[in-house]
Amino acid sequence: MPPRRSYDQYCSAARALDLVGDRWTLLIVRELLAGPRRYTDLHADLPGVSTDVLASRLKDMERDGLTTRRRLPPPGAAYVYEITDRGRRMLPVLQALGSWGEAELGERRPTDAVRAHWFALPLLRALEGEGEETVEVHLEEGEFHLRVGAGTGPVYGDGPAPGEPAARLTMDAATCEALARGEMGLPAAVRDGRVTVTGDGALAKALRDA
Image (cartoon, rainbow, N blue to C red; front, side, top):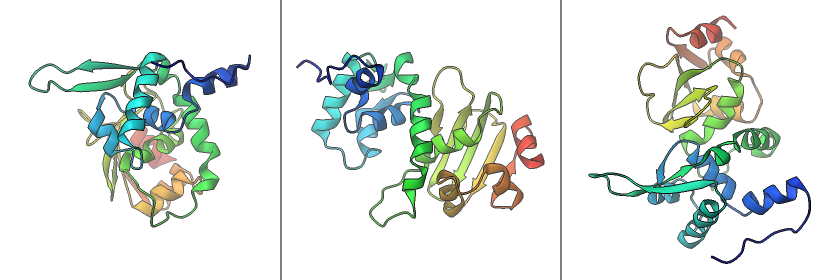
């Protein structure tokens, strides 16, 4: 592979951007925080990226120790990409970047793509400090689950939670978008009846009592 481009600056921020500063790289990290993904799945959930650019970014990320690639056993027999521990440590960076970018969201534009699990990161921020629990989220666009306070492994995933979640959150698109824009907090949305909370876990009870 060609040598990695570098800012050639003796600065930790510049060194970090040498690895993740290219277009699409951080969004690939966002997708792989959900767990192993096939190339076709990544391409489907990154609308706008070309196949050549996606393949190039994945090769760069594997070379730099941010991702690995492995072949699934039969009957799957497909290759999947996984984030490494080092790549996973980008989660707080994405959280901070998402918080900083809340003011840029505005109303959804007609050209904006959306996937239900893209709301996972702002909801994880809203649930910080609630212990280690699994939360299932139901939106009009689909459902996904979060692993709040997870120390290892995927922090979210598509579809229902494996096993019984500590809480189930149901909300409409307008409420979820308002939470993502930082216009309201989750406890306030629950109190106002805009988020329905079910479940018997400690987190569900805490949200209902907030």
